[in-house]
Image (tube, rainbow, N blue to C red; front, side, top):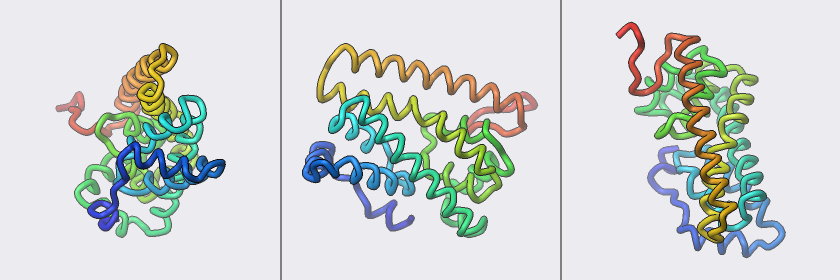
Length: 206
């Protein structure tokens, strides 16, 4: 993970697009595999999602991006379970204490809210959920529901860059509206059902 954080970099969008297109019919499999690996590391997933829109368009790109990111999330979750709590604490580094405070014996609402919180990367949530007691069912359901609108919005952005149509613009607007609405709902639901706090938020007792 340390090596990945400091040494691995995705190529620029146009270069990544060309590399995947070079695989022809197998490009979608390469894309999913690469996306899954990226989702397991500190590398931001944004570039992959936007690339999905550039290469495959909104519909196919969204489907492939969601599949790829969820495979990476589930793999990281189970890897964390295999490594154990102490190893994951070291793996998370400066994120460790905050992630544990929010995810220790938490459930659906915590994973759902953190997935949608701006600025919170995917990978600490994946590893923290596996290490700190989030059930597989809660993690899987929360991840599947919360990742779709964000992925669609980023893929649609890539598709809009490649083809500036009204349809792609509408998809961007609608998907971001859904993300905002889901974030507000998740925050209120989590705050009302636990004593955990979102990063930077104050509890009513403060």
